[in-house]
Image 1: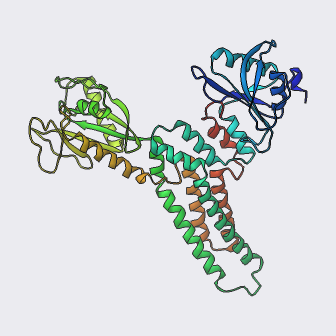
Image 2 (image 1 turned 135 degrees about the vertical axis):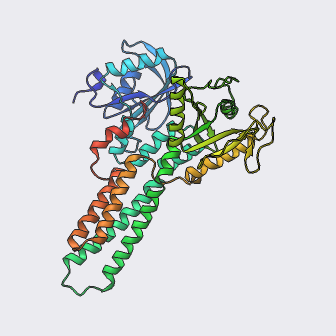
Image 3 (image 1 turned 90 degrees about the vertical axis):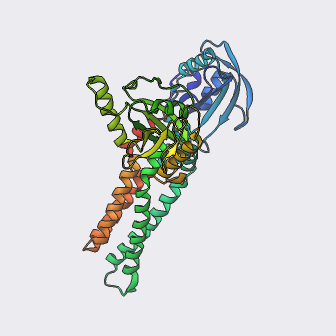
Length: 435
């Protein structure tokens, strides 16, 4: 491998702006790989500073001209976030500065990092598992307080600790089973197998409970959908605007104004919710309006919650499974048992918003941070549960041991403790550059 200090290839050393690009005053450019120290020395024309000590340095471009005064950090591995030698340059955030420093790094032999490559290297170095890496990605993308809490718990290893406990228990079960196979002729205690089967059943109960709650975890991560449905001119669009606190939908006394789905993203009780205004439900000879009605009915069926709006002065029959709300209570009193609101005056809107927030929290498990929140987690844990069920029903000790091994492999796919090369591109490809 050639020396990057002389402008030759720097092995597989990568770099990326880690944030603050554009109008921000400071941008951190991270460098990771075997030639990080050489690259830092080349750009600053001085030896790297003492490890983990911030110093002020002149940074030079590819032509040797000073392009910025920056704070430089030299971080020798393996005790770094990627497990490799690393360096950082805290430069001013102007686009011209960032481009000049990037060009100098490329000229010295480094290459721009791919999306998620820093986190992928951290995973390969054992600095984090896949669950923690996904937690970091979710934390970056978090829009609500509940999402932030769930992502932070995952990034800090709360879910990984539960999975580690399961793997420890499963390892003990497998060890007992192997003992029963290898020493079948020995005088083993009679209750060994019974105790093993009892512990296997308890483990299966714990895993099944998390599997049952997985839908709530996914809902919190991805957000809920609440569809607003009802007849024309009952005030669906007005209600949407009131909840969104802006004029997101056109309001008109003309029936059939809303013909397509209108979506607004809000936060209710710490949960991200997409409110969907739909076309008024009625029969019509207008082909476009009828398509809107069809979409409205389909959205009501697929939504996490359908909110049926009725006119307080002429309430329609409540649809089963929907939350029924009587609008226009400023014009007429609502029937007993219906939540009365007025999107025009604001009367009752606080109660409606509180009710919707409570429904959102209930649908996401009361913000209790379920273990699973991605499809691959659910698939792997479902495979592990099925393997444990097969192990309990196995007629031969050897078959039971094999099913226990399959269950351990399935759990390992969640954290990445087994060979998961096939899914790494999917996991880290969703990251932003520089992470």
